[in-house]
Length: 387
Image 1 (cartoon, rainbow, N blue to C red):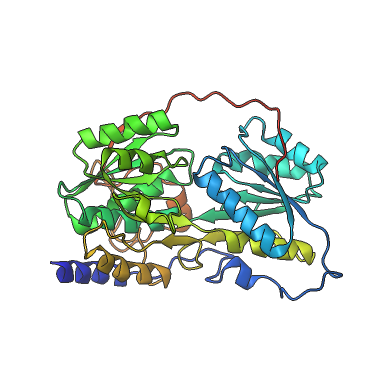
Image 2 (tube, helix red, strand yellow):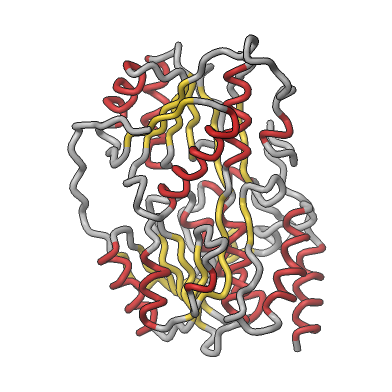
C-alpha cells in the first residue's frame, strides 16, 4: 500500500516544475548577502526595532519571531528592541516610539500590518522597514518579505491523511496569519492525494477559547487528526489534553517528547533573513527588495515524523519534501475545482504566486465548519520598549 501511494504521489508531483518569483532565488538571504568579513571599524552602529501584534512571550508565532530576533542579534552583535501587543490602529505610534528610541530599521512581524506599513513607510524615509506579508515592491525604504506556509501545510495534509482512519482531517486556521485560504487549500490537496474523496474540515479561530471551540467542532464533524495554523500554541496544547492526533505549525525541536499525540510539525525559521538584514545594515549595503521564504531556501521547514505517527509516515515525508525543496514540484498545478465543483484552473494550467496569494475561495474537498472568532478589543497604546 505504501509503495503504491508513494509512487502515485511522486508521479503526480514529478509532472510539475518550480514556481518562480521575480527577485527571488534559491539562496537564503544570508547566502545572497554581501561579504560578511568586515572589521569593527568598517561597521556602522545599527539598532533594529521589532513590532509584534501579539505578546512576545506567548509561546506562539510571535514568540518564535522573538527568539529568532535574539539569535540573529547575538550572532551579528546588533542592538534590537521590540514593542509587543500592537494593534493596527496603533502601528504608526509604535513606529514613532521606535524611531525616537534610535532605531534605524523596523521589522513588522504580522501580516495585519502589511497595508498600513505601505503608507506609513513613506513618512519615515530615513528608516528602513521589513514588511512581513508583502509580496510586491514597496517604497524605496521597504524590504518586502513573505512566506509559503502553504508548502508546509501540503506536507501536513498528506501526513495527516495517512494517519487518519475517518478520511476526515481538521484544520484550525487563524485568519490573521499569512494566506489562510492558500494554506487551507494546500492542506486539503494534500489530504486528497491520499484519499481521493477525503475532506479537510476548517474552522477559524484566534484566541484560546475560540481555538477550543474550533477543535471541538472539528472533532464533532468526524475529524480524527487536527492540523494547526494558528498564532497561538493552544491548538497543540488542547489537542494534547484531548488525546487527539495533531500536526503543529511551530518549531518543537527538542520538545517533541512532551507531545504524545503530535505526528510532525512545520514551521518558519527566519534567522538567516535577519542575519542578512543586520549584516547589510552594518555594512551600509542595505537595499529594498522582495523576498519569498520557502522550503527551497530553508525558511519553511518540515520536521521528521515523530514516534507517535504511523511507522511509514516518514517514508511519505521523505518522498515529498525533496520534490518541493528542489523545485521539481508545484502544489497548485493541474485542474483545480472549487467546493461547488466549478473548474477554476484547467488541467494544463499552473497558478502563479500572485494567484495563490490572492485566493479567497476553497478548493474541492474543503468543508468549513464555522468561524469561531469574536470581535477583539484593541490593546492600549501605552507602549513599553523592551530588549
